[in-house]
Image (tube, rainbow, N blue to C red):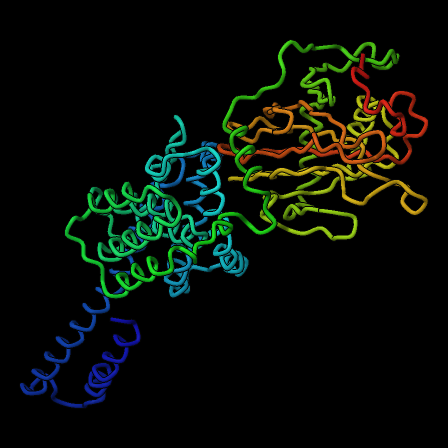
Length: 527
């Protein structure tokens, strides 16, 4: 019963009570009138009980929601561990977009509880965040080949989340996958939902809804893979007596009649995504161990400069041709914190620039937040720029500001080249092409987040304070196709990096690295 209905029932009774207040004289000696008063109070009590039941139901719901949310949150002091796990991150976003709006509406009915307008505005954005969280979670599953049941239970390797997904969560993920024509994976999520309903008394979805969708996705999956018998057997093992309704049966016949001509495998990939072959190479390297050619060296590099003799760079050869190097302890803890703090006010969605004629665009090709930090923003920024110039032995006049990027749940940068198509040194472009890239890792990543070069079979694990350095172009300013690279999705934790792109402009008088030198980039230039 709603609050308004309770109030409407009370109005006539209150009016009767008020009428008796105005009666003068011998009410106490009038038996009929006393009886009427008694009956009126009884009706008031009935309405009061209804009101108590109504408010008690809301209170019980609030208490239940409070217990549920508290059970899914971390213990005090473990916030970082909680936010590091993608299942906990997904659950947090889902609660803010699904559960909290209802809770806030009930709280707002009590005028003693003030809901800040900024909180209400923030909650309106969480619906889009939920779709992004589902995309990130399924992307992690595909790249790292995670088992659906284990992932739904919160297991990633030996790491267990504080929360787990319920049947409704599994169904929502399956629906997202079905829109991308990934019916085999969608079926596995429907089976996970079915298991929760059958074995754990999960009531977030109905049996009929599950059976119908599981049958539908299993049926449509035959267009995605040839061995459909596995899916049929799996479906029948859940409910051998299941009979599809008329609409589902019609869809089944239509699927057979069209001979799967409706199926579009390209829907699996995001718009402007990398080719499927590159996906496979990228995913395989992300799942492996950090690797590169064996027998390479670690060196102290100082270029015979007096200022570097006492504190040379600690360089590890990753690859000789083309040169890819890992520099250890390239940035200090205090510099990391200064640059991260300077970027916080500038953070926005990461964007990509495909060629010189396009503008920066936000895309699922790169999922992170980024902020630009100029050398004038903090002394640490200027020191790091100067140090990168010493390391690369290149002029920094036309280098770009520091780009600080943060990759969260499932954050990645798919295969790309840093060189910008059509961006060459000329009379009208004194900056020129991106000659080299220096990427500094600003934190340790619990799991995932490698930088991979699939054509060179090189994978570098992020180590806090270290930097990866490579060249993007050849001596004729053409792109070096071999440096195609990408940032693997972050499986556990987060990943902070600083990108520094050095341009051709101003390198004409660099004795070791003149881009017009036919031997550029030189092997062992650091020796």
